[in-house]
Length: 346
Image (tube, rainbow, N blue to C red; front, side, top):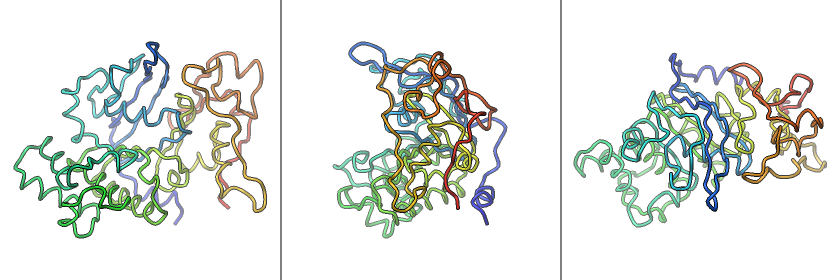
């Protein structure tokens, strides 16, 4: 069975309305008293049961977008420049912490990038999961602890009763990540945001964590937004992929067409830099240069200064709009002229 057939077999039927709707969302960060654009004109939808991958270099805005979907970007250092984010019809942007408590945990959960720093070292992991349950659902400490242990069993933590009494530093990286997942799904959210859930884990543990997320998606019907630098993980796990560059969405597409034939030069360059696409005894392909610093983007295509296909006077003059249809979009005026290589699937 092909990867596409497996993905179709695992897919959960979607409803008419998307669970998540990000509409022309733009956000500034206040730095030294001045607003600096970190996200510009982001559009994204996620349906129930769907897995969407966010990729891009460090600083592209992936985690900022995820934090914005949770309403976790501090208002004292940020400014909404425009647009909106809705989770199951609830408007997230502009809401107070009190208003957001109703969706955090209940509607949307998040696995943060580093489990050791997202767990409190002073409390046992079972108590931390139980606190999430009591805060959102109430109940007694005994009932919350029993449910916390049940959640540890759900994420396949062996000897869950004993592990619930462990402190984070007493657990391996893989076990800490499972605890974070148990905490994120404790109230059975409709959406799970996973920010680099396999970073710093060995290959075997990475595979176990991805299998766990896949099973939770099937059993609970959760939608998942997966942030990862690992394109192999995106190819294996996601239904759709969205590429961010310098705070802009530059391409989105179903996973298989994206890897077969990317429509943006940046996407193609990312795929060509994968080690598995390199020929033996040949110098590795690299993407030259670096993304622009915040607040220093040039007019026109933000990737133009690094692009091997740039045309002066066309690509670097005015902002580039998104082309294509809803299912497949790209921010490149030369996309129809270019035959860009994708991943080597041979």
